Structures are given as C-alpha cells and as structure tokens.
Image (cartoon, rainbow, N blue to C red):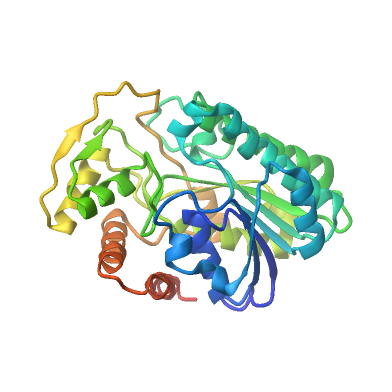
Length: 354
C-alpha cells in the first residue's frame, strides 16, 4: 500500500476477528498506528492469538453496545481513519439471538458514528457491511450498489439497516462537519482464508474435518456464494480509504468488492476441490436439518470498484484454496503463524505491485 498508511492513526473495530486480524497485521506492516477495539476472540483457536496480532498495536477489549465506552475510545485516541469491521457475522447465529445481532450490527454502528460526530478529528470512515445487505431475489446477475437493500434473515436485515444508518449519518452530520468526514460503506462476499475458525462456515468446517479426522456435514451442496480470499476485499477497503482521504466527496458512497470469478462455485464443488488439495480421505455427509432459511444464489457486481478505484480481485478460487491449505498445513505443523500470515500478506502485496 505504499507509504500512505505510515504514521496514520487508525481505529480498527473487530480486530480480534478473522478479517480484523488479517487487516490489523497488514496495517502494522504498512506502518500505521493501530488501535483495535473488539470483543475477545470467540473461537478456539483464533487467528488473533495464533498470529500474536496484539503485539504491534494497541488492543482494547470492549463492546460496541456500550456507548460510553465507544465514546471514550474515540475521544482518547482521536483516530484519523476508522475502519469498522466489528459485527455479529453469522447468519445462523442471528436466528438464535436476533436481538444481539441487531444490537451489535445496527446500534453498535450508531454508537460508533455518534462518537465520531461528538468528537471531531476523523477524516475517513469505512463501514464494512456484507453482500447479504441486498434484497436477494435469487437473480443470475451480480447485485449493483444501487439495487434495493433488504434481507430476510436477521443477519442480512441488520446489514441492510447498517447501510441505512451509515448513509443517514453521512448525509445528516458527517459530510457537513468541520472538517468534513468522508464515509463510505463496503460490501464483500463470502470471505475465506487461513485462520478462520468460525462456526457454521463452510471452509472452517472443512478444515476442522481434515484436522480432526471427523466426517464433514454440509447443509446444501448446490448453494453458491461469491467466494474470495480475505486479502482481496481488505485491499479494497484500504484502497477505498485512501481515495476517501484524498477526495472524500467523490467516493463517499457504497462499494462492492466481489471475486474475479463471476461463475461462483457451488458448495459441493468447493468441498471436492479442498479434499483434492488436502489429499486425505474425508467422509462427506448431508446434514438433514432442519435448517433456517438461507439463499441459494448470491453474486456481486464489483465493476464500479474496478473502474473507479482501480481495484480488482487478484486471487481466483484455485489460488485461494491453495493459500488456505498452505496456511492450515503450517498451523498443523506448529509453524510461527504470525510469520506465515505476514508472508502471505507480503506475497499478496507483491502481486499488487506495491
């Protein structure tokens, strides 16, 4: 990412999660002064702990649902750039506890944006939502940024609500602040990569079956998702933040960051390709359920980010699966996972030519 991030004061929410841990390490490599704010890791193991993410940053454990704590963090650390990744991110978990999902994803975002409004100083805010923020009509084409927001399940609905909250705060308060705050939202697809141990997620479930020698149970082998390596959308968030810093008014809107392959693989094909790469016998079973509703078809159209930000996904699905298997084998063999993760970030940046 060049020298842009060197010395920038960055607040990163959700830094203990899968995506947040990768992004925190990337920002550390780029020379940013990173303050992270999040709940404690909710998986065992966790990338945050395996890669010793906290060693190169200020790590604060807390809860976005506590507005006083959020106000205190923003007032004390005075971030120039805010990257908001913290969320309840699992569709099935949103059925189990919809109140927590809305409280975290919607009101947590309100608390953060209100703190930024009350304590001027930030120049750039990127609010990360999800491809599931769209009203999914199971159409073949990829969703575009001006398509209708919606969401049938509580998680997807909460992400549509988060988009509306961000838009309202931008238009009502932040764009007219002194100095103005450039705010954009970022929507990405099904992000996968090494170090993801989340529950009810396909790739972590596959890897647990490999490592534990247990049968793999899948819900719907025909469902398709826009699979992409975690570093591709993270590169999009960082690129978007740079554009917001330089010309915020022109980029303060919604952005899709989808995979390069616009013919996404179904779940069954992903399982087969992972098994081929691991080269180990795994029993695959169909989980009869019952299961809460999940959409079968979902695609994003990332052409706006490609044309206006100069961003594009660099890793196709075969490369992504190769990198995941490489990372997981290193974990299995007891490698230093901070070094392994940093090496993959450096390799990705080399592919970007930065």
